[in-house]
Amino acid sequence: MPVSNERLYMDYNASAPLGSLARQAMVAAMDLDANPSSVHDDGRKARAVVEKARSQIGKLFDSQAKQVVFTSGATEAANFALTPDWTMGRAPVRFSKLYVASSAHPCLLSGGRFTGDDIVQVPVTGDGMVDLPALERTVGDHDTESGLPLVAMPAACNETGVLQPLREIAALVRAHRGTLVVDAVQMAGRMAIGLSEPVGDYFIVSAHKLGGPRGIGALIALSDIMMPLPLVRGGGQEKGHRAGTENTVGIAGFGAAVEAALADLARDRWAAIATMRDRFETGLRALCPSVTIHGERVPRLPNTSFFSLPGIKAETAQIALDLDGIAVSAGSACSSGKVGPSHVLEAMGVEKADGALRVSLVPDADPADIDRILASLERLLKRSLNAHAA
Ligand code: PLP
Image 1 (cartoon, protein in one colour):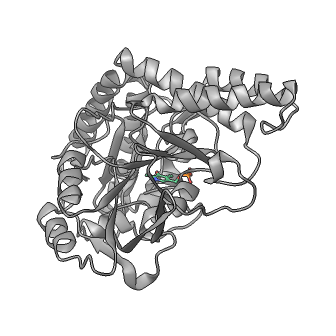
Image 2: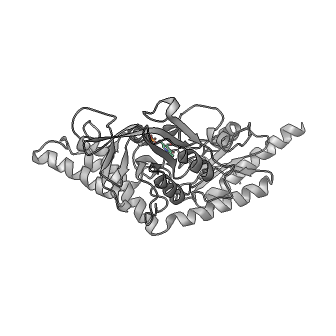
């Protein structure tokens, strides 16, 4: 296959391309000059845009969202939620320890406002699933004298795409009087969150992972009885939960992106992407039978493939694909430029000095795109074979 000059973007988990409805909503919101907290007519028009988006985003959670608090992204939402100090009405509520999956995104792993000693990592299995018996033991041993347990779990891992058994986790956390914060960043808008049974109490979402703009996210509470103490303090915006004039343009784009994502979900757009991912992995295994596909035996996001090619460094593969016009990641891209071992692979106990490459397909990826990635990998594998033979 000849090398194409056209760029092929397959790094959806790092950031999704901005959707057309989100772009339109943002352009329209740029004409709103007023502060959404102003009481005059212009202010009320900006407020209406913010509130429309809030209700669009609430639909990600059926009609169960009681609070949608806008933040500057998922990282801020995590720092907001992960705090020992909460309030229930006027009464203080104290969480004395944070239990977090060792494969979680750094914004959970860093523990927000908890101090080091109060952050307990919960191991994951070699497949990347939370070790439920270990979670049961750790949260079961929690001493409620000093405060309640707060548990933070990813719904889906940004690197492997592995989905966590949220129903089981939520039941276990409830049984131990805990509260569950779910990082739904990689799942929201791609899979139904499925709230017919409890799967968490608070959810973190980010616009740029579902076709909205970067720099806007939210913490969603299914109960408005108990809330974390604000992280950003000042004015009384967001019902006192997050100070600062709302980012009207970002919020408008976020709301429209969620609406578009939910429409795509309703017409099963992501089911087709699983077929493309499977086509990719079948082709990959034919090219390199000794490839390791991380998390392949357990439920994963339909667009994600995270794999290690023996003898080829993930960064080398990433550069080779980039030179062929294909954007993928070597692990996650959240701390740009950082080249280091993937903490997710380490958490899974995978000893792969060469790291892993993540192909995260965009929803409209087609067979020709898959064949182009495979052709690029085939050239790389041949070069590597020749280099070893020389
Ligand atoms: N959580 C997960 C699972 C992510 O993949 C990311 C970004 O990669 C984040 C949180 C952080 O999101 P944001 O960029 O909105 O801070």
